Amino acid sequence: MPGRDRPPVVLLAGIRWDFLWQRHQTLAALFARAGYPTVFVETTGLRNPRPGSGFLRKAASRLRRAARRPRGPSGGGPAVYPPLVAPPTLRAFRALNRRVFVPRAAREILALCGAPPVVIAYPPTQTTLDLVSALRPRLVLYDCSEEYAGMPGVPGDIEETEGRLLRRADLVCCTSEPLLERVRRVRPDAFLSGPGVDLGLFEPLSRKPFPGRVRTVGYFGHLSRERTDFAALRAISAAGFRVRLVGGLGEVDPSFLEAPGMDYRGEVPHRRLPEALAGVDALVLPYLVNRMTRGMAPAKLYECLATGRPVVGPPLPALVRLGGHVYLAGSPGEYVAVLRRLAELESEERRRARVELARRNTWERRFAELEAALWSRL
Picture 1 (cartoon, rainbow, N blue to C red):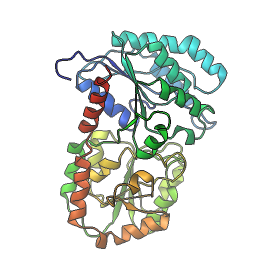
Picture 2: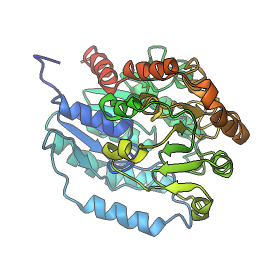
Picture 3: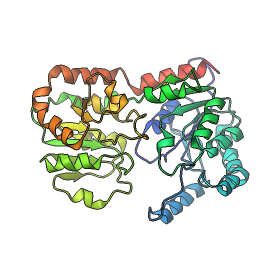
Picture 4: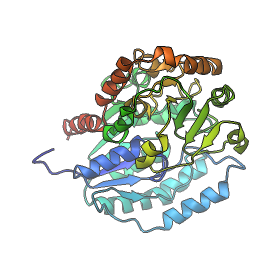
């Protein structure tokens, strides 16, 4: 805000800085760009690692990251702080965090801030609550972006700890209307702050007209057993479409990529996504519909729409409410049927409407709304 001293901002993220670019990194980068000394605190964990899930590799990576000397904000970007903590699951882990790891992390984060910070919190775990308490923040915003209680392996009291965070926060926002409806039972003052888009990055793809027939179908994002409808992707590939996948594989069976027509490009930096999507005729959002996903608004939603390409996705409430800007498919066969019919369904008016909707949902607009809400309480 012009003419005001900007307080430090500490973002307690649910992901690593170098993970697939999401809301957490975008907001941290925007706060830093706007002149707020910003610290991006990487994930403090949500569940115990599963056996056979690369536990030793992940533990070694966390230790290496935590051993790095944290540095303050520089070059217009946020400081990235990799905390060393135990998972927020077992009682013994929580005691260790509260007595040893959280006090150390809070001291180092406050040393980077230099003043009482504004805290933006994500995973509503006991670790997050302990950190919020230890940081003694000037203001707390809970940015509710997930249906955490629907995730496998989360702490059994996640609903209780989320309730405590909801009551502790000075401000609460939600990334989708289904989440907002649930949260307003506890916080009637909660407000909507959905996903956004860097329009300048994705809109250039919309200049290429729809080819009239779909040959290559694209998806960019993290593939996971809990969220991804692999049956839909297999059906699209089996129907003769080329399926271009861009993003991380998680714990996906590598044989999935050996199916005819699968074109896996791996992970790419966010700024290179348009290059990786060049030549794609349509995009899909192949999410499973379950307790975890029903409340979500896909982070890449407006990025897909900004390309102007037709988008096909499941009947998640957040997509159903878009009024026809996304083609809905309730089964693998329906994905195939819609993709085959796009030649008759698509029009220039539909393309322009998608891009216009994306234009009304830029990250700059989202950031301005959040910044105004914060200053209303500072």
